[in-house]
Length: 623
Image (cartoon, rainbow, N blue to C red; front, side):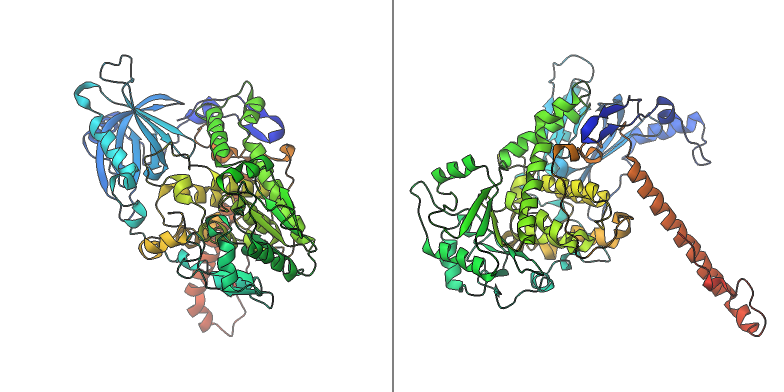
């Protein structure tokens, strides 16, 4: 189902909503399977009303909870009668009377809030039902009959299974019985990744001081630290860093040996405390690379925020205490600002795109401005590394803006992270193992939708990666679908990859033993996530242009639920390319079959002149 839409030209942001005519949207396609008479159609619809939905997709381990006749209030096509099926993993709706049928397939983990709409005395058509807010930029409204408390059961069941942790139930990832040919938990091994970077060496060593999470409960067990720093030094430094998150190596430049260190803010406080162990530790980091005259400390926060954090015991590295360091503030705002920015963006793109004042409306959300600041900060980090200077990166606690900056700068500097496997390693390393608070930021299975810890920090990171793929379309092995699949499963709770806040909790919950990794699915069917235009360049550093003129709204993610939005031209080219690859595979398979079937005859006529079928193995299908 779809309606026509005028073209929206949206200028410098590269955003264009393309025309979809009424004729093309409504023209039916017939084949021998759907040429049936009206009576059989009516019969099938009646049976659909009476029976549970037979075609609800179900994963291994997924169980049906309830089915109910309902009306979906579609924001694009109006009220649509149908049946909703709720399982322990998804909400699935299928229409009765629309041909072709309209369906909705919503993982319950995507749901942020469920509210009752109207009351028993509400007047007006379809004014009584449920209002569902989702984390992926859409809202759903369903209407029910008012008599007999018809929504009570479905509301309670939906609320229970959408927020399992609030009802002492397990997340679906622990109930799933999916099996894949690849084991995604094997993608990342900290020691192997450090070894790939050329570590340890005579300047840097691996420490297992955090093997039992005693030094820092939100850090991984394997840490790379200066060779000259003892484990006792690390313990002393941890006492002066927020959440005990000491400066540790994220990445080392293969040529100039400059390093990216990540950590949290120092506990300076209002009184301006100093810690000689911390000051000496940063000097050891600076000395490890002989080219670094002054260690650059990138504080992701605006200056005023860093000063304000002194009131709560935090702060920043002052010039008096850290004389061999320079401090640079990157002016990236906190999680609360980012949350409100995405809310404003949702308001202007769903359900209807704000056409009349699009540019000013988009600008008022400040979303692209925040994207620009994050990218600009990462560019500064990458540029400083390229010039041979080591850097330290932190924000307040070192698990939000810090992860954005380290991972994006590493993506710019190291082409390995632009491969499909490398990007998985990057996410596992800089986000998952170093304790980005996925559970708090996303709210997996938690009914508290107004929790102040919710924030789209990881979504913002993936958006920045997408911006880079637009500016460097041949530099990344993966495509847009890969990024969207990651974001969809950030919420879905189908996999264990993004569950919980840190490794210590994941170990305690036995996530690797009891759940499946998202990378298992992706790597078992990775062909559809491949960028056909990828060109491998081992030493190229990417510097994206971080200006509003060169940034775009990610239409195919943020506005994908609008049926009037067509895929952009590049996606069509990519799709055609994949079709050609599939066609080539078909031809190669047929050639192989011909070889096998003709081999006995060829053997019997080995002395005769070669026939075309004998030469079939020399044929190569051009692409």
